[in-house]
Image (cartoon, rainbow, N blue to C red):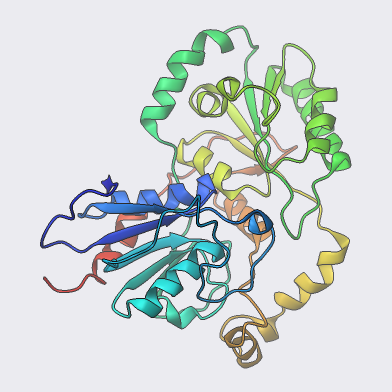
Length: 363
């Protein structure tokens, strides 16, 4: 249970959640906190304009935060701090410098200094070494909120009733390294969707997101024809956003390959999922091949030496994550026939929470 600026319950660890702008990231932190036996306090962080997408130098610091929009970070310091992402983890390390007894739990991957984090809970798309402070997951921790789904379903059921079935929700993310997601890619997606509807019938409801480029949105909007529909994030009113309703009411889903969070929310519902793989940027292929080569993988002497000095990070392998989903019967590549997931999704949050609980100071 989260609390905002209320009196801390005596005899329990003080837990802070450092959250930023990414909703999918925040959902994982909140899911972990909800599985703990203690209340938690939220500290919202907002980045300066130049660091919304730009990358600050990774170090213990608050210099990248907007002090007017961020919650103040001041004593009493937490016993346990849970966060996600490189920018919030810089603030977490800044707190550690002022409170050496604070235990830092990072979800995801560290930019550097793996040994400075007390626990790293890492999803399978990240290539981290085996270590005492690393807890590997089979899937990220985010799941759709059942209460929000039920409320959205009640509001949208009539609106979606006239759309031919099967209703395929198309959840569109945006460009992320090393992938290309431009107008040509958007037109390629539209072409595959048209082929799918021609084969299976039904209709589409396409929804873009905060990261979707305007050129991609435009390319998709040109191709979507009634009775299919499109929601254009940042153009159409927020009240028209069908995302939660589609999770509740759509028959099946297409998700672009960049968005692990949307893929995992669909998987948690047990509904058929197809992934639209994005093309790799030509300029990224060489450096990606270097970063993932065996001689630099976690546990190798050259790779560990470079990572310890901040010269090499822990690689993210989205394509490998997709392959795991295909092998486990949880998803298919777009263009293949949809299938109902063959296995249930294990809820790993309680096991991860047990590792956090073990970090608590004795009472």
